Image (cartoon, rainbow, N blue to C red; front, side):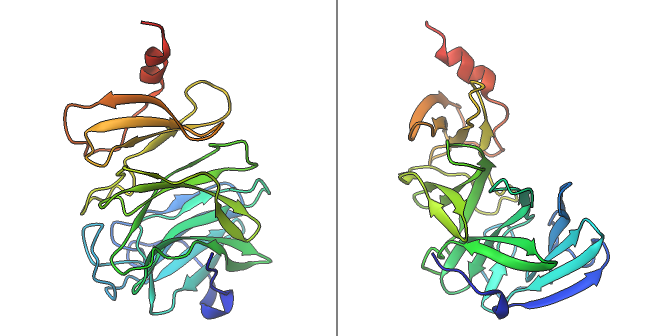
Length: 262
């Protein structure tokens, strides 16, 4: 795994809240009740010409407001952008502190998952996957939930959802984002130009404490529900009758019905 050292980044610590002028256009503000109260992308830039999310404007910085109201801004080097709309605030490892999960792209090597957090009052990188390996290659963060018996919550991603769509489940182990299950190909959680980062949805359909993931097939004409404990397995499959263009809604009732004897 590739981890960029925090010294590569310029770090600004200020005080304030999000304004429309400083946020990424069409970007959102993530909120939580832990050590990180808010997070968003700032310093809009056009230095990367991919435009997979509908325009060529990407985030050049990550801005965080901590629970004391202090503002922290981490500015990316010129070779990187946040090819994303809104960061995700989740305690991945169960330590009580929020991780900030992002899609960060190397303009020459493609997208990666990068995880940040506050440590001793400083916004730092916790971990990152290696970039895909080629410019103009993106990944979708499909969902974040407790998918397996591993401690904490895992990140479900789909690499290159427009060309082959490979599903991976990542777990944060110390400073490493580790792929913990065999990758599964043939899925698509995004279509080019869409502002919906993920069409997928996670729910615990059988109340066993582990979440299932519903996501479209590569042609976006079927929904496959996958379970991950124990191992990757198909729980249900549904024909939609049309190409999926909106995020999947609640699917627990449909899965419960499919499990009943016919």
